Length: 604
Image (cartoon, rainbow, N blue to C red):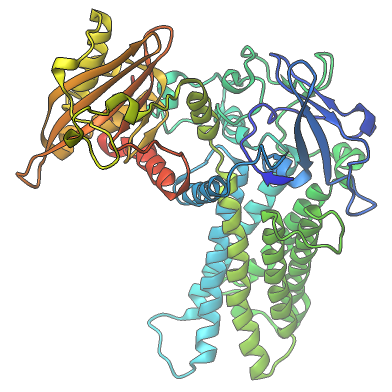
């Protein structure tokens, strides 16, 4: 079977009590969501003294019938809030779709600021810490490599300050790792939990209003309503908001245990459960390593390091450096084991394996550097300082690999749902082919409107078409924008938007870019209860150039039962959109970020 990693909204809130017997693993939920049945014998323990690091479940439909799909639980994926579906070859997405997902993940790494996600913060904090480490290493290595070079400032002073900042960042990252481990599958609730901790009145955190979701209160801490799996999230869970400090997780009957956000594990938690969780142990050991390594960075401060006697260097500075690096090494080994089925068999197709491997190589470099500190020769000093450059560089690569997958988004779920429910795929040739072949393009379509052939619309539908034409003409009107539903897709060769607010970002950009935009003529080709299809000829005159250009296109509007436009497709040729490849990624980037420039009204 082939492997895919979709954003499984139906399963993200499913939680099990892994202390129970495997036969008890049956996940179900309310609202007729699919069920997961544990596959006997599928549990895998890569280390015999730790709990299973992977399990497999069959996915059943609402009636309890097997769907032919399997769900694979991995402890690391669960900790990061992701899930793996095992699909048959017939169900699997195309290779192009897989490439699209990778490109989208890379674009997300560069553009998404997922402040609500503790896993994202871990990646950011350790990445900045690694950059500080590289800087400090270079400042230590350059005077050794180029002893005759002159520097504007004392490199050792700058290196000491940067090293201390690195130590603080690593310590913070280590603490967040423990927070992540004890809140597996809830990392997107970090922003909500932080707001709850900062509330002085002790009241519960209310769900963000529609305006807050659009960014009108961007300085406030709010949960990511699309990804946070607590019961307070009605957009994902479809349950009522519960004004209590604990939230029930519906993987069990309502009498089951409650799951709350934790800022730190209790000793009882560790003794009963977490000491046998490989992911928690890896994160906790790394935290211990950062705490020990912090001592080294404290001693590196200017005024302290220069005055340390040889005994303090050999008895405190280098031992704390070495012991911290050994903790990093052990944690890296556990990260690698966590994504393997056997301790000796690599899994290079798992991103977690590469994260663990790069961390392992970086840890070896730090161990090597610390050991060479006990050697006083010039060669040892040179290699020790050089290791402080290449080791954090490799470590930085591993930290960067966590960012694309940590910044999760509800886009895939929302857009896919809208596509499945509302997207039309018209046949341009059948709709627009002209009996006069001279009027057709080489592909057999005629997108130039012929108003005399237009179908007459009733007043309500005429108003919809007129509002759309007004927007094409740069009206930038809130009244015209209200023809769209709040959740709607706009799809053209340049952009892809999945909310009315993002669509407004496109229309409000026309008066900023165009000196003039006017509708020349239209021709309605089809009018059905759920769709309107018409040809549009629009003339654009860009501001920088006094040259006008007429563009013919085929517009397909899909309507919901309330008469709102839920899918707006603008085709410039006979080819429909595949929603795959680099083009789709670039269209999404345009749709997601143009609002920052055009700034449409937040009420939309």
